Image (cartoon, rainbow, N blue to C red; front, side, top):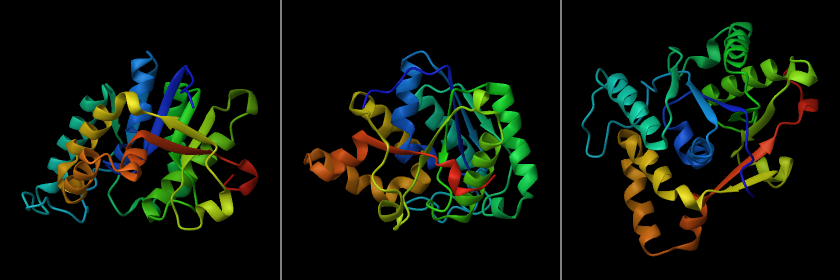
Length: 228
């Protein structure tokens, strides 16, 4: 599916590297089309489980390293509007719901997007993912329909296919494959463990690996499911 031209795209995820795997090709393509993209990353991922492979970070240095990696990932995509929102990793789920919705409202008011990209609530596994998704959905859902941007969501829980069916949108990002890989490489403290295997599989032109890197899948959010 061709990526449609948008007025502006707002991407909201809780952790550095959330954008890299499923959205960086879409972001890079929008930027190459001349569309403005804002990426709001809610935390610095300071509680990330990995410290590099082999380890090069400590618990004390990891926040700064992940901040630098996030900026490097933005650079790899060509993104200039990166917003670090200052919440703490693994505590987003404990933030006040209405405070979170207001944060999303402020981002929407400031950027006036025609498209918002985030996770799909109840289908994104991690508590921080879920809290972020609920806040975005509530903020978008409370807007008058005439002002409501499209909402494309990533879903990857085990029950996704059974309950949501096949993705509504599949973007072919083959043209920016190298930019996507560079975005993943930028988050090396967290991705070293899987990049070595992935790059070996890509070098062998393994179909599943190529498909994973070159296709990005989204669901249109179904507002009849709640979170208003």
